[in-house]
Image (cartoon, rainbow, N blue to C red):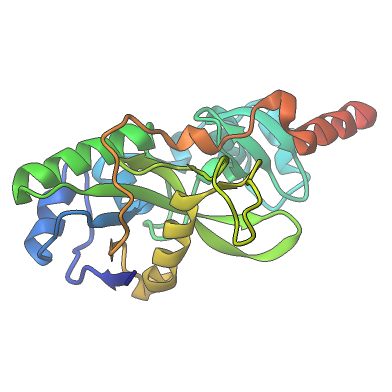
Length: 255
């Protein structure tokens, strides 16, 4: 197997209404089986997920949490508006977003955007990935996968890595159960987070800061599927998530 990953160059600054699929297809020749890995920032910008902080009215709860952190009350309110549950209030805000992803600050970002504005994640990243993927196929005639990525920190480790927040024609999880290892032993619990692994690979080329490359093509993986898949396959059910249970118990004891 040979795996290749390369940047799509000449991506302009994205604004609301831009056709990302057209921009991508105009700047690279795609092959059947390619995976377009796209930073959530440009997807959100194309969808108009940009807000002015001055338009946000913070609640008393947002003011209370902001007093524990370095954030403004308005920024905290944006996080709360996009969260199903706040698991940690300080010194970071760790939340479960309305889409079910557990991350810092609900994925809200005030970088790579004009001062005074904030950038949200796409409202429905799986749907966004599907729309871009179908449009790419329409423009190129190729069967393609799409992964929308964000950068997340990791529990117990320093540093961030790329993760998948939306997928199209890509399994989020590859289930190895029932297969055998090198010694013929049956694999019973092995589930590989393939979408996150591809996102992490792409993140090496995306970069950070003002020299970033928001679109990466990964080629050589025989992984596309016509089945309906969702990034939520990776979200651990509440009744199996011992870390969430522990954080809730800690919150209750401190209240």
